[in-house]
Length: 107
Image (cartoon, rainbow, N blue to C red; front, side, top):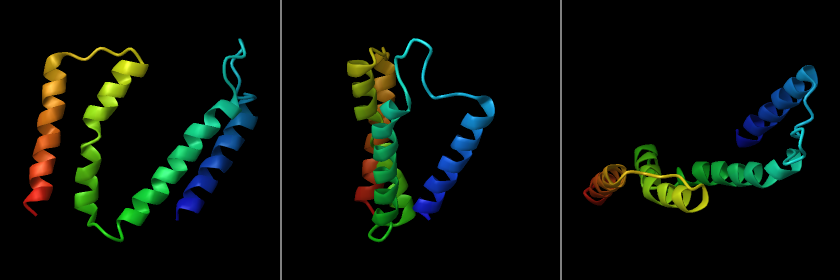
């Protein structure tokens, strides 16, 4: 299933790239298709892991666990992407994470 999903994405992206005559590189040469390989590979690995975890957890618990990534993503966004978040946004993210933890812990 994962292989077919990725294969179709590759086929569609290739067709769109050929029909729109885009090479995948910016005019100033900043990034090309090769630069996206690490992101694509990590996405593939994450998807495979997502399907594998369903062997051990229910879908609802797996989905709730994914919501716990909000705080680390915000922290990395601030650290790497220089994004600014208001203290209220951090509080909301922590409350959502804590609520999910309570749901999973009381299961």
